[in-house]
Amino acid sequence: MNSVQGIRQYVDKMIQNSGPGMKILLMDQKTTAVVSSVYAQSEIMQKEVYLCDRLDNFKNRDQLRHLKCLTFLRPTDENIHLLCTELRMPLYGQYFLHWANIISKADVKRLAEADEHEVVREINEFFADYIPINPHSFITNIPHGPIFSEVDLMDDKTAHCVGMALMSFLLSVKKFPLIRYTDWSLPCQKLADKVQNLMNKESNLFDFPQRQGKPVLLILDRRDDCVTPLLNQWTYQAMVHELLTIKNHRVNLANAPDIPKDFQEVVLSPEHDTFFADNLYADFGTVGQSLRQLVERFQEKAKSHQKVESIEDMKNFIEHYPHFKQMSGTVSKHVAVVGELARLNEQHNLLEISELEQEISCHSNHSQNLQRLKQIVANPKVRDIDALRLVLLYSLRYETHSNNDIMGLVTKLKGRGTSEENIALVRSFLKFGGVKKRKSDLFGSDPVAVTKRFIKGLQGVENIYTQHTPWIKGIIEDTLKGRLKESQFPYFNYNGQRGQPATMDPNYRPPEVIVFILGGITYEEALAVHNINRTENRLCVVVAGTAMHNMKSFIEEIKDSFSRKQGGFDGI
Image (cartoon, rainbow, N blue to C red; front, side, top):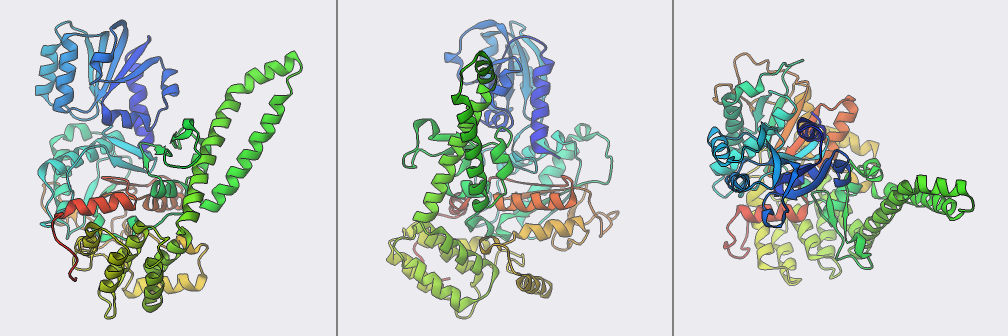
């Protein structure tokens, strides 16, 4: 179920099937993100791909009839139209067409009619309509409207697009799963129905042998856990995304002070950067130590290259120079990134803020937490986004507490000049994922959860900044052990009806689980899945969602789910 390997195999097959000779690869905006997530341009050039370009850049591309053209596109109306236009005036000698998802017969007919010069040699469906983040995580590669709304409905177009992306992943890893979903969530029910109908409709594509028991596709609702996307993160990949934002493996450092021009945008891809791959899940302190060791090794190599006195020294220098240059770039890049993270951490007092986040999320010391929170919100050095973050966490945790002071905290937010839009967000947030909406035991109030938390408290914690455990970790473990409650997460019948199939064992233990969260996932959840796979000593769980969230993007998702014109905050 390796999402990265699934995409790489498709790209390799695409190149190999066209035979020897120089090629150009044409993509659209979405498929460019897919390919760049698994291949560096220098790497793909070694496979005779002379140039990568966009299909919509027709006017700026030269006629090169000696080149073979590989296209890798999503089957949208716009792409079909652009490709038909190009086929009527082809710039290249041969065309090999590849689609990232299912293309309709009507669109194939349109392309055939446009191929007046008979330059098309092949047309294939390669199911790669998703962006791999890590081998065990991916996000859907589609534009969509709001997933949630005040009436709790997801529009048909969004459900279809998300369903198609999910199906492309299932086909790329050759899995035909049983479907389970969050029972209370209408969007989850709708997506489960859409995926099941798509699998039934394209049943011939799913005709591959199942070597073991069927995997489970578990569709969850983001609103069951609104805590995880709000928290500051302290492992490398997650911290970079929270403070700087990773988009298509790129990080923008243009706003960081004293950053050289060459490093104002850097690529952080575990597929092409061994230091990043080795430190993805390391805490920030460990990353700093590893970076120091890398710098020391680089300094040693730099000293050895300074002594070029003989022909043999020159040969050694030329032989090792590419590796030396690559190492130099890696060192400079990560020094820039880690330096900016350290600056933001110190400037915005993130350690103190994160400590309180963890206390609110993991412990129930209301009076102590409220007192500390009021002090932090009143501190002018604290960023507005961090003050809002803490108030949202407090509101979610103590929404039903008899002595909560949500109104008082909102007043303090107003006093520090927080925008009316963000003030209104406190109410929207509770409507989105508060106790009246979610059905999860998010803060562990049942006796079993209380006992686990008590034992964990006796054992102590290794790091006060990483005490929180995402809600989905327990859900995944229960699924693998056959303990997930069917009343809360029912199976979806093959005939499209709700409820448990009569032949299903209620204690069924799936060999593999694909968790899909409507509303997006986080790097903390990806880390939890990584740890489960490491415990199982195999890649048996994949987590995916409609987006990879940090706090800012999650807040935007909530704002999009509600009317912007709902007035000021006037109580819960």
